[in-house]
Length: 223
Image (tube, rainbow, N blue to C red; front, side):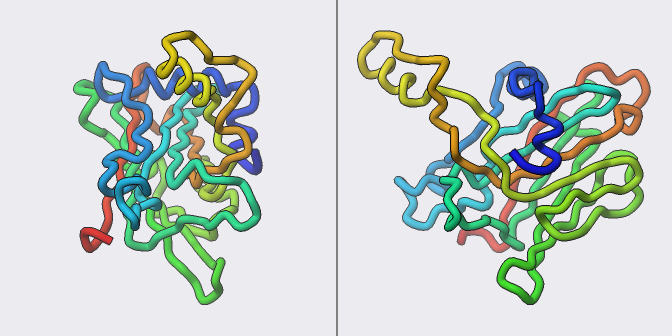
């Protein structure tokens, strides 16, 4: 892992994965929606899948007086040097945060979009609605951005999820438990992600429970 996500996840991978299951807006753990809906995001169903709009996982956890949130999308994909970056100016991304009941209604909605400069790789990001931040946070991708005590980074990161997908599939097909704790299907793969570190005070005094979930919307309808 590189940059800020490495700092935020260091020593906390298990806690982050658990938090993704606990901090959901309903009682059902819907922490990932890879390739969902398949008619828009699964290359096996649609020959032109909407990869930039496909949310992968939402991780959220608390430590040292700040709340960390990471929403991954457009992945996982091979970490080879030829892997494209799936930035798209026509997709609106939202990270919703609920601090009060009902947990399915957000008190804060963080929105971000990408924009492209003159060069092939000159992409930037504009983020608004971050709790405690006046105005917007904007700057180039793959850069640590800071404003009003909040830290943000958007870019390509190591896939943080650890799971033996091969063993899971073998278990389903054979009926015999084949999952191993030393085999990670997602090792060596990347996601595009937004990572935020927000002081707890920005979310409100006395807040002890959060609902965190992500959304994407494409401008102009179908691709």
